Image 1 (cartoon, rainbow, N blue to C red):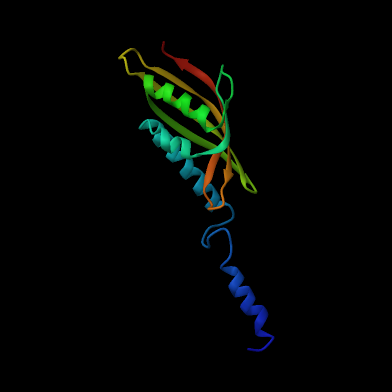
Image 2 (cartoon, rainbow, N blue to C red; image 1 turned 45 degrees about the vertical axis):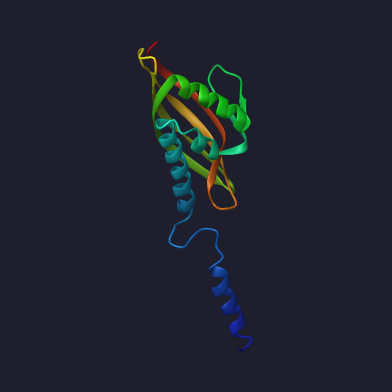
Length: 158
C-alpha cells in the first residue's frame, strides 16, 4: 500500500464510525428515537405498565406535577404511578409540537389529553394541556426522560 492511499483508507474506515446511522438526514435519527420513547411511554400508561415507564426515566429524573411537590428520582415516580394505577385506568394521547436536540439533550413540548377512569366505577375525568419533557441520550443511542412538567389547560369531571 502506498502512502497516498492511506488518507483515503482512513476516510473510508472512519465513515463507518458515525454515531448517526447512514440514511438519516440531520437529526432525524434522534427525532425518531425520541418519538419512539414518547410512544412507548404513552402506550405504557394505557396498559398500567409501571416497569416500562420507570425504565424510560433517568435515575435522577424529576417530575413536576401541577399542585404537587416535585417527584425526585425513580423511587418517587414509581410510588406516584402505583397510586394512579391503583385508582384509575389511564387513556392518554400526546401531540409533539417541537423537538429541539442540542448535543445529548432534547427538549420536547407538546399537548396532551388524558382520561382517568376510576376503577370504582365513578365518573371519568378528562384533562388536557401542555407538557415539556427533557430527555437525555444514553450511550446506546436511546433517549430517557430526565425532566417532565405539565400544566392542565382544561379539566372536566369530578
